[in-house]
Amino acid sequence: MQTETNTSIENAEKATIEMKSVSRGYGEKWDREEVITNFDLTVNPGELTVLVGPSGCGKTTLVNLIAGFDFPESGEILINGKPITGPGHDRMVVFQETALMPWLTSYQNVVFGPKLRGDLTGQDLKKKATDLLTKVGLSEFMDKYPLQLSGGMQRRCELARAMINDPLLMIMDEPFRGLDAMSRELMQEFFVRLFEDGGRTNLFVTSEIEEAIFLADRLVVLSNRPTSVRKIIDIKLPRPRNFHQLTSSEAFDYKREAMELLHEEALKGFGAAAGESQKAFMESLTKTPS
Image (tube, rainbow, N blue to C red; front, side, top):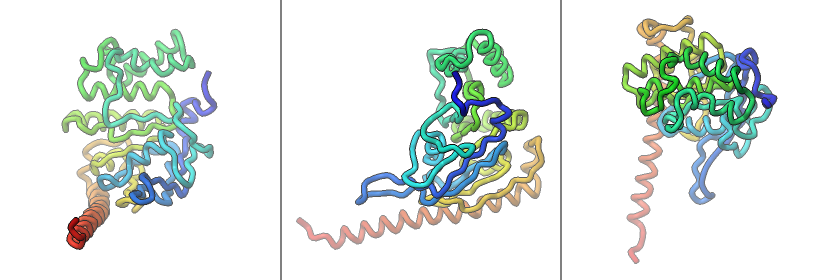
């Protein structure tokens, strides 16, 4: 039986995520680190929203909060106006590292979730899984195990495993990180075609500016921690996208603007780290030897 938030792809295209005054930190009072403070962001329905930010700014924390793996200390996160209270198959995450179960074939990995829940069975499940594996180019590899697949094939299998759940929101947490340059480019092109064909709401996290510009409808540049939205850049490159667009003057302007913002934020992080190191050094000099 499906939950009320597990709806058809028509509704999935209209998914909206709202983060309102969200704060999250870690550690005790005497050693606390604020990661996100009063964070506001709306992920628009049917758009591909891409997050970029300096290393360690809190991108993975945002993913965990929206996925329901973690909870804000204040503020609220809504999906189509309803509070997110935990994980659910209305939101599916594709992680940096492969999460395929190595003892299952490609087909078995894809059908595992629906089969476990019992919301899709028999020939309906078989047809849907087969269609998805064909769509992601793995029709001839359905009986292969993850170790028999290339890195790009494993990524495509994970996309099919997420898509079979018809989630309202796809969350991509640097999914192509670690692939070689050619495989990464092919996966970017493959993923953007899937998005343009289906129009599903997507939140994509990356540290690669060109990848962000190629994929995004909106590029959200994050500040150094505690994280806030430094700027939202509307990427108005026409769809369907192709890599030739990255050589255009418009793409170059987007890249330059994003790089300047990220450089400023990265310098803030280095400055804070240097300041803390200097403070610790000075304190060590004033301590009385025991």
